[in-house]
Amino acid sequence: MYTRKNQRKLTSAEKKRFVGAVLELKRRGEYEEFVQLHVQYYVSDAEDGPRAGHMAPSFLPWHRHFLLEFERALRRVDPKVTVPYWDWTADNTPAASLWSEDFLGGNGRSRDQQVTTGPFAYRTGNWEIKDAVTEGNYLTRNFGRPSAPISLPTKDELAWAMNEKVYDAAPWDSTVASGFRNRLEGWASGGTERWRNHNRVHRWVGGHMLGGSSPNDPVFWLHHAFVDLLWDRWRQKHPKATYLPRKKLRAGDPQRGRAISLEEPMPPWNVKPSELLDHSRLYRYEA
Image 1 (spheres, rainbow, N blue to C red):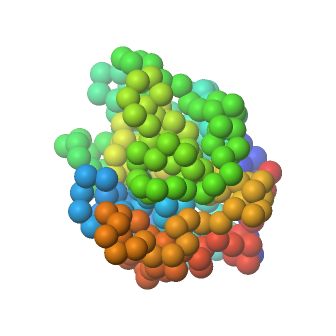
Image 2 (cartoon, rainbow, N blue to C red):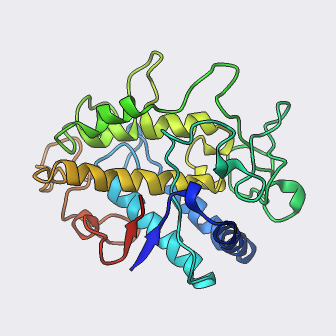
């Protein structure tokens, strides 16, 4: 078993090892496979087919396995590397340690949002964007979206999700108003609160963190490690709560075959949510 640490507690050597392993996956061409996979399974309510990755109950177990696959790839490069997590309720400014020159680099410049600092800046020659909706081949960020300002989620906003006692509810998509899964994932109808918690973090970082190709920005992994940790904390807070739906949805339900129940396999790995509820034999989180 290994440990995932808060990014603010990483040593300089640990940061260097993590960055080095990520860059090596990029050099080998493996990194793009993770980007493409996330794009493929970023399926919205309006699209046909199963919604495994987003806007569905399997959002949390699907990303847990996705993160595990990425971490295993990193550890094949360097067995000492694990994915750190970013607590965005605490490290919530552009001056936070994860945006340092020796780790993830900082914000994009104003004229084109291009990241020009750190190891993932295009100018270093090691980080070319190959799979994205934009034409640029450089990483972009737009912290706080100055043209229409947005802030990172607060501790109170996160508590609103963590206090929800039920995992998920019908209609098992982005429109459900109750349930921990969607309160954490963060879909809501219009207005100033359209993006909440997980979604708001993607919007705050901006640039390539918007949309299905968001793993193009390595901060994606630190963000989702924290989301994974939050799922842990929620299960500890509500020990009687279970993953829902527990059984395959009945015939005639419009979400049958789209929302994945506890014992149905999640594509593309053929792994069930029930197999991902407990990770304690694989890794732990350090406070």
